[in-house]
Image (cartoon, rainbow, N blue to C red; front, side):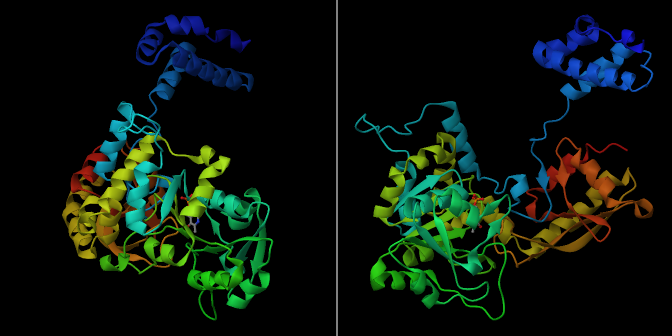
Length: 458
Ligand SMILES: *Cc1c(COP(=O)(O)O)cnc(C)c1O
């Protein structure tokens, strides 16, 4: 019976190597990993494999490997060319926000406490005035993310009633955010109007009635309908409401920018302030074009914000002190838009001129060649195209430059990509036409890449 050759947990914990693991990682985690490694060995033995000669040694080294496996959540270099990469955590925060967040983490802060009176304060007070100034809204509130903002606003305005939406705006955002599903969970009945490509003011008028709770406008953020199209702007929906129904217009901007991005060579999208001027409520994300932490803003009419604040659902979506501190620091940067390009990493990366990136690629080429030459890869400067990501400006690409890494004898770039992902600071590129492309738009400082690559052993 081969299973008899398996060591006991006790014996493993008392071996020298076992004691060293316990000293480094604690008894609980070590015992767990030893058990898992033992189980694997037992299963292999039952399947007919011979036990290794030194079964105890094998189990101990398997446990040691598991205990020292690098943290998947460790910082990595996003050279994919997608600046707001949802799967990589979207916006990188400015230093001011990082400081504010860590300060708030370390100590107590007057989150819902009025330091002047010593009485109760409100969590939203820390952001309300800033948001009013930056968006022109009468009032504002903030929740966990924009999906929550839309859900909360719909539930408040149209729970048990109808929400009118154009068929051209029934969008799906990645990660199972679909307007019809959100609508159902918000307790609102979806009232679709118009067609996929064309919706007219008369379509909304015909659908309006005593059962209507809201007219919803959704920014088609991750696609564009082109050709024979027409949509009804929020301002027109407001005019329709003013004909008597007074139904509020909710405008989900998705990304939403506080500034005119055309100033930085990006496509001009309506700003939050413009949307606020034309709608009753506007929702948008904190970690898309705004460049802050994950959050969802609701800005607009004070009476509607007051209704939202009374909705018990809001309590389940509220922000903690860490994110409020970070958001406040990010919003404060917007008070000085002239310096935003230096202070806000998202904007700095999106607005980086191609020539600047190309110069960095030329500078880095010999150094990167030296680092990956050891494993036989060739490095060439290349042109590439970045994108904003997170569904913002979906059809636009930003001319960029980078490094194209190709393997010896046409070795699969997937292989090199895997090696770069396994580094202590993973380097993430994208594979295109047989090469691994490192788009340098997202690289802040040459040395970070070189340091990351020194971890590459032949
Ligand atoms: C991204 C997006 C959302 C969801 O926002 P999150 O902040 O990711 O929750 C909702 N609506 C639109 C139009 C979006 O683009």
